[in-house]
Length: 270
Image (cartoon, rainbow, N blue to C red):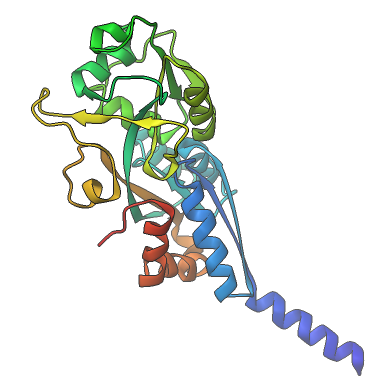
């Protein structure tokens, strides 16, 4: 009799429990981790695992069926859409939040603002010394995310006008590595999501009107759309797992989930 009862309990738990996998964008990692943590507290039968690696890594996992949700800081590329189609995956897209992409330097750097054109010049290798943009006579050391990163793609398209990065740009595997490198290197410059800004780095004001107005990245300037480098953050999933991921996505988009968005340092949808 005892064996039957135990079996029924185990079976009931197996039916009710849902293990969900989220993978991809490093930018979204703190957001998904906090959302998943709170979601699991409210839904004890659900388990959510979150890993980074970059938007491209998450989308590749969606294509080969090794993740339920791909988190991405950019939209799907055409070749990824083709691969999803070839794999028989009908995908859906959800915008979870927005993010301001900040350009950061070492706190000792006296430069506090740059135009989009100056940023382009630095990252393509045309501007190589800080004195060319009002700083000290010191070499500019440029850090970037690696090519699998959605942040890399977004920065290249929206800040660099789709021009190529200079050959001597140092590629970093994760946002944390950029923060560490910039914080320890006086002549360094890089870019990170708003939620990652801390006292170890300095965020620059940016101008997209050739130097007429310079705006600092912040929750306020991202919300009122005066900061020029704001992007949506996405979840992608196969329609086959919609029932499985619905409760988590509903939570992220709920009032409570969107409060977490802002608490962690991202921009809520409303």
